[in-house]
Image 1 (cartoon, protein in one colour):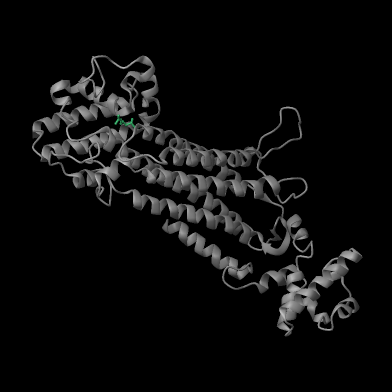
Image 2 (image 1 turned 90 degrees about the vertical axis):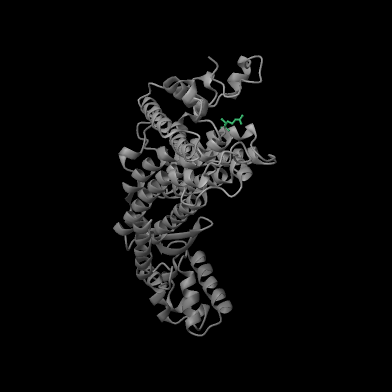
Length: 463
Ligand code: ARG
């Protein structure tokens, strides 16, 4: 028999080429459990509206239960002839309940409001899963910071030595961006907690159904949509989800490129990867490669592509539903899949990282990274910063000429550069002093970083 939901006015069935093009069941099948939940809620409002008897509701619910377990154990699946998940599940219901009862459920709903609702439900579940995985990565970063509270390293701008910072300070900077990603997911979820069910194809329903009851049933805390046209046609919730997942990808990629790929080189030697989280070479026996980090970097491009592809699909679409919108699912399904595979591996890699303290601390003062400390010391002696900057720059110039570091300048050399440079300047020409002096909120002093660490940990508990 014809499984199509729209055969009535057609003399012929669809051409095979059309059926192939039209089918989405191979990728929207993952919405099946949500579709069944939606059907249960819909059956209840049909009953409330007097369109199903209590007995019919009971049999309908039984049919949906049976269909649900058949979907779960794989004994019922959609086929290409079903077009999409909604059509397939209607076939399953008809097979169980017969056409008289099975055919009643479609009253007052359309695949347009169904798919808009189910897609929100699916993405809300995965926002929670991804949020949990991000929290685990944050935990790993917090663990790294906690295990190395006093390790100094060269802080960089333009990848050049800038000023010494605490390794923990640097690692927590990455944790901060992930905190914002987690917050973005929570705020997105709040915005997305509105149900389009009851919008019908676009205009709402004449059957006296109760969209607010369906919304409550399906866990949409903020009720049903205010506008049925918007409910069926808007996909900004998908685009925003794609952005957040792309942003997470970009943030992972930045950690990957820096802490793992660059710092793990022979030249840097700041960190060593655990064997279980690195890979070898098929030809070079000595190789130990940071493949997880490289896959994170690569996948971030893919996540960005999912976002931009989706935006291009949405651009200039007239209201309300257009079939173009069937292209909205694969990109974000992929974004979920990729992050859900990537994050656990990435977290394992970060949690098992070995930090080479000696190497970091050896390089912390190199590259004249304490020049700013000379300038700020001079400011404290009453020297205008303009002059102080010049004087400290002069110190660097002399060091470069002589091939020495700042703390190797003699008292005479200091005095010759500026009368303000008394031997007391040496008190700030060491890394622990430079770190400890930056003790304002957000600074790199161990005391300030300890405050930040406590804040990040508290934030993780309340997430
Ligand atoms: N499978 C479609 C989608 O994912 C929903 C079906 C709506 N089809 C239609 N002809 N109105 O967007």
